[in-house]
Length: 239
Length: 239
DNA sequence: ACGGATTTGTTCGTATGTATA
DNA sequence: CTATACATACGAACAAATCCG
Image (cartoon, rainbow over all chains, first blue to last red; front, side, top):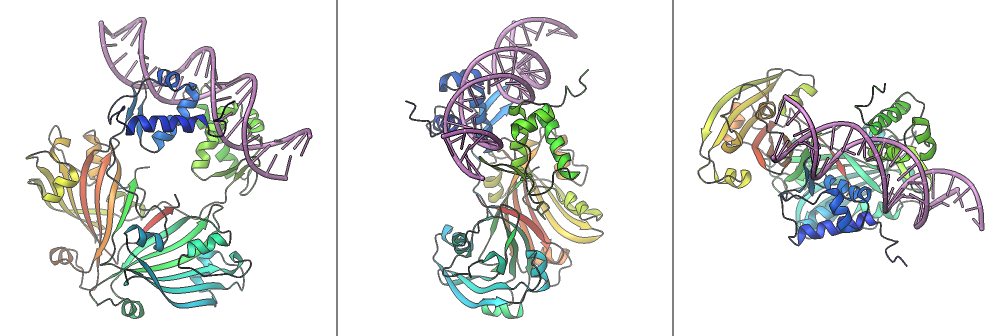
């Protein structure tokens, strides 16, 4: 009888409130009806409505003030930045450019001391190494070094596409977050040449260890960006 | 009789669960008791316990699997990074170094085109400008340009300490987040000299617009870091 | 300065749905 | 199929913060 049994009511409530905001029924800075009133209007219990409001508050769509009321927030001027984890392929496509790849090396190699530490490698475990130059509209953007522990790749690795993220997912490995260090160097003997960097273009480096949902390190990568080709956005929050 | 009447029970429950994890009663990967059982053990209702578990899951302390159970997550190897907003003063103190300041300029000035756009200034509104060099253990770390809209400073600004964050809070202005651009330049005529940067040390720039909880821009700052003195950490998450 | 009305915050009890072993 | 565990939902009550007369 209930054809909505598949969609939780708090999600429906969220959509209804979003709709009220986007169609102008509720404007920025405007106060929402009280929880009791709004719950009645939407035909849900106050607890269910509060679950919806909790999520909307988490997304900064609304602001709740104890003893006063709930208000529609001003629209932030902001789009997500580097704190959102995406692959280089996605990065280039988001800019509306054509991603390209020049592969310099692939294969299994002995790990360095850094690799063992960062990837939590067991004894004698090799890593799968990929070295590539990634281009945007055929202009070199970033020199990529990627290393994957062997024990992540149970059936041998089938690296057959540009995005390592995608081919790892085909192996059942899902990256959840990355611990990233950002720093800058003026020049690198080999890489600056390969990237057609004259001496006055510094390299912006992203050194990243990627983890899955269980906090297991699954990918270690070092990216050397041409600093004249890239700006990173970050959304920094008070904690 | 109940001396905890002031602290919400779900916060107490969170602490009790944290304690169980930190004292080893619950180990990483281990399954928690069922919600019903744990609620009984902690002396709260299941709803209250769930509020506690929800927050712990948000913090990645635990992982919940529908129909299976709740588990203690492996400890991430990670400390917070640049996506956490902190002042330069905090940044230096976190590294265990002594922050210092050399003030180059303070006063009200006409805004530039960029300032008007980023700070959403009204007509003829001046900005309060501060130019400083911040040092860590007396070594120049960063050249700071900070701009504050006049209408934020109702009673005239009392800029009397190193941290602009702190002195803004004294004015009743609480910064919530910052929209940040990161990029690198090889050289800046004036700043590289002031910072004692030889030509081969690039400058790592953070260009930030800070907002309060209501998404009102309250501070625009440009920081030029000596790239040999700084590395930024970022925690990047899949969305 | 006080009290009552309003609004959000917290807590409990209970029932039912859904996923997994 | 059944038992277990997490997910969703409702109703009710009281606490805490705020506002206004």
